[in-house]
Length: 385
Image: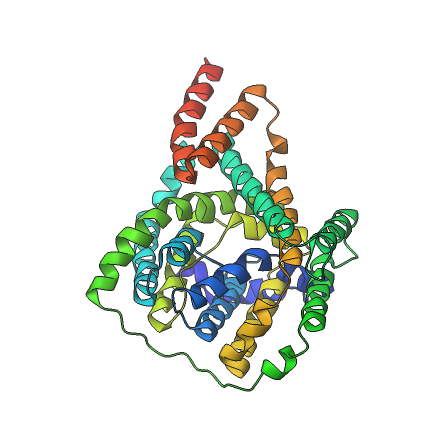
C-alpha cells in the first residue's frame, strides 16, 4: 500500500486549500449527485443517510489519497437501471460489491496500464466529449421541462446560465457557491415549511445483509453494464483529464482503480456503488476547485449532515430547484467538451464525431468506444506510414 502511505497522505493534506473558491468548486458536481442519490433512495429503497455518510467518507479518503479535487459520484449505469427498472436495495449493494472485486482484480493485474498503452488519445477525447454533451443536454432538459415564469422556471435557469458564463473564467467569483445559495433561497421561498422538516436524527452506519439472489441480480443487471463505463470514464478518461488540468498532480489509472475498488467495499454498510468521473472532475475544477481541500470540506459536510439530520434532510434536498442543478450540468458539460481543443487534425475531429454519434444513437458509451477504437488505431497506423 505504498500508494496510500502516511507520508504521501500528509503531503496531500498539506497541499489542500480551504477557501471560498475551493468551497465553490466542491459544489460543482451536485447536478449529477443529488438527482441520482434521491432516486436511489426513493425507488430502490437505499438508506439516504447511509449513502450520504459513505459518500462523505469516500470524499475524505479520496481527498487524502489524491492532491486534486477527485470527485465521488454514484455509478451511473447501476443507478440508472436501479431507478428505471426497479432493482431492490440488496441487488444495488451486491452490484457495488461485485464492482469492488472487479476493480481490485484490475488493480492487482495492472490491466489499466495495458489499456493506456493501446488507447489512442483521440478515443479518450471522444469519450470525454460524449459525456460532456450528455451532461449539457441533460442540464438543458432539466431547465426547459419547467414553466417559463416560476421560482423554479426557465427564466431562473437562463439567468443562471448567463451568470455562470459571465464569470466562467473568473478566479474571484465563487459561481457554484452563489448558485447553490440562490437555489437554497428559492427552495425556502417556494416551501416555507422546509425548516420545520429538519429534525435531529443521529445516524451511525450499520451492516446490511445481502442474499445470494441479490448477487445474481446485481451481477447481470448492474455490475456487467457498469464495468466498461467505469473503466472508460472513471479510470482512463478521469486520469487523462486530471493530467490535463493538474499536470503536476495527475492521478495514475492504477491508483484510481484501487480507490474505486476500496470505496465500494462500503456497500456492505449501506453505501451506494460509487466511482470517480471525468464529468465531476471537470465540474469541480470549472467552479473553482484546484486542490483536494474542496473534497475534504465536501466530505465533512456530508458526514455531519447524515449523522445529525438523517433522513429528515431528504425533503430539503428534494426541494432544491432543478433549474439551478441544470445550470451546473450545462457548465460541467461545456468544460468537459472543451478537452477536445487539443485535437487539431480533421481526421481526429471526425473520429470524435463518430464516437459521439454512435454512442448517442446506441445509447451506450461502450458501443461508441468499440466502434471508435479500431478506426482510431487504423488511422494512427496509416498516419505513421
